[in-house]
Length: 244
Image (cartoon, rainbow, N blue to C red; front, side, top):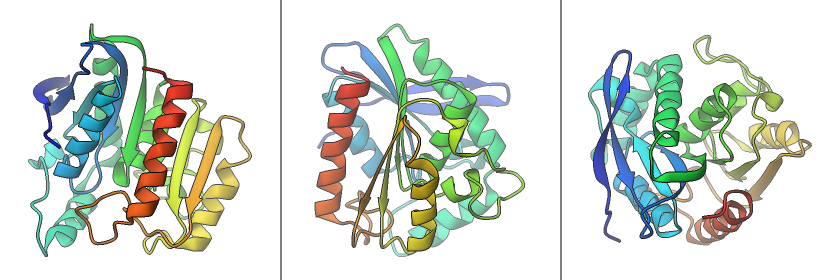
């Protein structure tokens, strides 16, 4: 799929953050803030940006690693090691502030006519939860949010992250998790489920046998069946909660 994005600039108090913007064929619609995985605004994230634009959304993907001088991690055998290295260097609070600034920028665009939500993957799934706690987007879709155990107070929080609690996000939210996630582990995912699922605004879905990053076809943990099902659920859920 060819990505039809255009470069945009997002002003922050500390400088200009690069971003990628996709417009739907209609030229306008609801907004989606698309938050990257640990590999940055990768080809996979770009494809998902185009997918969302094809559904009728105005999509903005900020380069959250811009403060580290990185747009995306080059694919190859060292990609995961490089990405984890970047994750260790990221300033979480600055990343949240950048996400908030990007959401504000998106909501202010003339093309965004009927609300705005957040879709995040992996690193971006947790970041999206924190951004949604600071602002009031119309919806949040989080794929295997890696920081959620800390944000929910399930595991010890990095002092720079801090625990928010399950009720910190009032927006309707959809959470996808694989039950064979080797990074979060099944007991942790079950604890995330137990914290979120009782809330009226939360839809929690899980995928037996699916690992972390199961939606990314460029990563070795990709699970085609789980990816297709999760995306179908995402598009149906967005159509109900933030129709384009």
